[in-house]
Length: 427
Ligand SMILES: O=C(O)CCC(=O)C(=O)O
Ligand SMILES: [Fe+2]
View 1 (cartoon, helix red, strand yellow):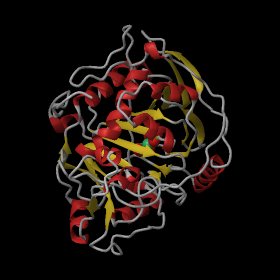
View 2: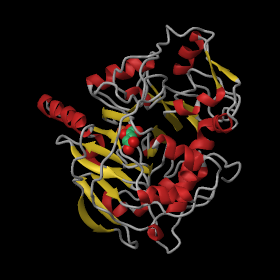
View 3: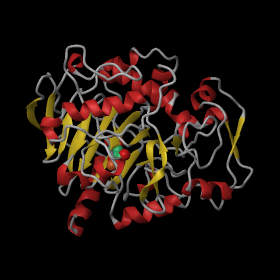
């Protein structure tokens, strides 16, 4: 828990990050055993492994995050729109086909009882972000290199590095602050979205313009809703190709119920096997840091930030267990604030951030997305899927994919959860 003074100072630092790029406060801690990966501590319990993912793995995750996950899983758009086509396909075809919003009663129902994923035809979209310039050149600690990072994401098989080194990954959660709670409630009622960019300073999810809801979204601040559920006409619709930019976040595995503020046992969409494998490997790889050899990545959230988006302060405290939260950065750099002292780290593409121990429940936020770095641009150059690199560049996009174990070990009766989905196809 933070004192009121600490909270005030935290929020002031979030605001300051919009204007300047503070020094990265990561402290070097050494090299991960069996790898050439350098790791750092922001505060005890908040670690960053630089370059934990190799470039090809980053490219695969980015491609899937744009072309597959939004179609296969519930996103912030799911509450508002019923999609019968893949968002990416609508985007590249510049489809003018109109996508209709759900009627109000369906949106409310959807929030409480989201359909199981693999919704062919049930995707979602969210609100628009704002923009702001994140210009800054901040020197920060750098670590590992590609060839020692986690490599390969072939579906159904473990990710391992080409030289024997391996890596790990992480995830996020919900806030416990009263402010965050209030904002979540607001979002649950159809206001505010995960990423409300310029939105209010107080909450959680990346803020873009407030819109739709998604589990992680709810922590967003009480940004003024541009479109409240109640005000949305039943007939509102949007051209298909305009939906992808509204994507803010999506949820794989257990979905968070923003009304009960718990994970619903029955609301589970199996993860893609490659993500399950990746996060398990990352957890094992970073055991020397956090002490946990295994974790089940039961709730995975992908957050999509455009250059002016941000995620306000929140605490991820809805999970039952204390296993590490693993969080991957892809694309543009960002500033990450954390803890009672609002320490600041600059995260770069391929980095793995880990929250563990008591710090697992520290307040944290992403107050600013920075311009794409040269290494990020080089990494994007290798993306094969047409249009993906251009899309990331045009939006100045950062994608965060985080994973957390939700249930206590006893809940699923085994060391490893086995509810991993089949991968239909690669790529
Ligand atoms: O984007 C990030 O790095 C943080 C995401 C986060 O805190 C969350 O999803 O809970
Ligand atoms: Fe979080």
